Structures are given as C-alpha cells and as structure tokens.
Length: 455
Image (cartoon, rainbow, N blue to C red; front, side, top):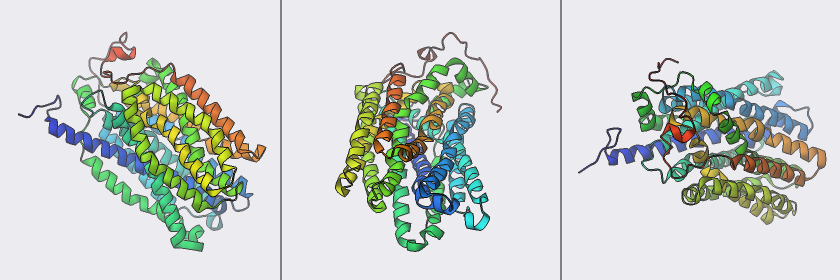
C-alpha cells in the first residue's frame, strides 16, 4: 500500500518530484555557469581587442576583466532582490524569473557592437548587460540549491543532493569551452568578427529547455509548510541581516578559498598560459575541458563524502588542499612542458571540488527555512565582491607587477587562510534536522503569527 507524505504525495510521487527538482536546479546552474563563464573564455581572446583596441594587450585584458567583475558586483543585488521573493512567494516562481533574466541578458551579449562601430558605447552597453546578468545569477544559486535540498526526504543525503546544482558549475564551464573551441574552428579568421557571438546566441536554446523543466516542478514541501503555518516574513533580507549577520559574513568569507582560486584555475590560466608561457590556447582549453569532465565525478563524490564525514571537515580539507597546491600548480605550469601543464590544470580542480561539492549544503543549512533563500544567497554572493569578481583582476595585476606566478599563488594561499578561519566557527548540521527554529539560535524571537503575502 502506498504511503503519503506531508505534502499529500505518495512516496513514489515525492521521489519523482525530488528527481525533477534536482534536474531543474542542475540545469539552471549549468545555464548560469555557461552564460557567465563564456564571457571569461572570450574576454582575453576577443573583448580586449574588440572593445579596447588601443590598449596594451595586458591592459586590455585588465579592462575586459573589469567589465567581467561588474557581473560579480551585481550578484549581491540579485541575492537580496530574489532572496526576498524566494522567501515570500516561493522557490519555483523566483527560479523561473532568475532563469529568464540571466539567459536573456546572455543572449543580448551576442548583439553588442564593437569599438569600431559605436566607439566606447560598446563597452558601456556590455557593462550594463553584464550587470543585469549578475543580478539574475545572484538569485539563481539559492533557489537551485533549495529546490533540490527541500525536496529531500531524509537528512542523510543533503550533501549529495545539493552537490548536483553545484555540479552545474563545471558542466557549464565545459560547455562554454566546447562552444569557444568549436566556433573558433568553424569561423577561423572570422572568430573576432562573428564567431564569438554564436555561443552567446545559442544560450537561448538552453533557456527554453530550463524553462520547460522548471515549469513542471511543484513548490517545495518546506516552503508550502511555511505558507500553511503563516510564517512568511514581511522583509526576510532585513530579518536575516538583523538576526544572523555573523553567519552571513562568515559564509561569505568561507567562500574566498574556493571561488577566487576557481576563477584563477579556470580563467586566469588562459592569460598566464598565452602571455607568459606562450602556450597553445587549444591546449589550455582541452585541459580545462578534461578538468571539468573530472569534476562531474569529484563534485558529487565530495558531496556524498560530506554526508559521511561531516560538511566542515570536507570543506576545510579541500580549501587547505587548494592553498598548498597553488604553489605546485605554478611550478608545473612554469616548466612550459605541454603534458605537465595539462596535468597541472586537471589536478587543480580536485582540491577545489572537495570544497565545492559540500559547499551548498554547508551554507544553506546555516539558515532557518523562512530566511533560507535570503541568508544563503547573500552569504554565497557577497563573496563575489571580495573573491570571484576581483580574482582575475588581482592575479593579472600581480603578474604585471611581479612577473611571477608565485605571487598569484601567495594570493590564493591568503584567500584559503581567510576561508578556513571563517569556516571553523560555522555550525555543522550534517545529517541533522534543519526544520526547527531553535536549532538556529532564533528561539528568543517570536515568529509572527500571521504575515501578509504582499511584496
């Protein structure tokens, strides 16, 4: 005889919704990562020449990465905006909005004219589009993580379940690399003219697929229960900053050792490999593609191990590995031997994935259900201002100043030390119930008996 859950669904129906939720969250983060990282791949190859043709190549790269950083600055704006609505009107509706905003802004990048057509206005328009894209991405991660996590039937697999939306990051990077490599080959000498635009236009296809999948899922049982119990907060962003500011700050700082180094391993390596090592860009692309293929295994595996050995233990181990390996990484790159460079790039993703896999659960578990979208999104994306956004800029500036990749390794180590120091005081809710308010230190605050659903 079939059993029924609190949502009114049978076990089989609940399992189906869980699978759909995981796929919906993962597809969304694939699109998000593809959209954002496609710019990373094209920026040093095309945008420095297309939008800043009179600049020195290294300076032009800095300027292109400056526009890239704008998309990170706007992420906390999106985290606050969509966190508000995600905790007020639901995870599903908010996720549909973030998907459309992110995807359509990426599609628009492919139409921005270059300097030769409209002068500096090309860079201005590109900056505006990147800002809008960042706002969409700021709301995407929290919803993708929660819609998967909050459909979980037990406490024992949250690390593994939430590692799949994380898996969308390297999967999106893989697709971005494939598209750049493919259309570099198809367009040949015309890549600077039109070849780079096609991958941005093709993102609209993935948006359509993602929208179809997300329209077919139900709202999470967790948020449904919040609605039924009339515990919706009027201003969830203000509430989480009022009652849990320390956790928001710590989760942001905890990401420094993961997010900043990732964009060095996945983006800055193209600048370093082509300008310092004078290596083949196709070799670097192939290596990063293989590394992301490996991440397809290591990211969910790390999430699974965090369910067994503890979220914080796995995360700190991975961050420590990133900090130590950074020096080995540049030593291997500096050999200028293709096979060694290839190996360095692949190995750099392993310690990163050890932290990245359990990261979603580690952050989301810190916040109570009625504030979870806002709190986790803010913590996750505030790191973008101090870590992901400036990382390629800082790395490029350090390289220009010192001429040595080891200065960049020192920067990575510094980020990892901060990350570990911030992670240690975080609570660890591995395999524990995260549905009760007292578990979050909010027992002293009375939960409103009734809240309006107006925005």
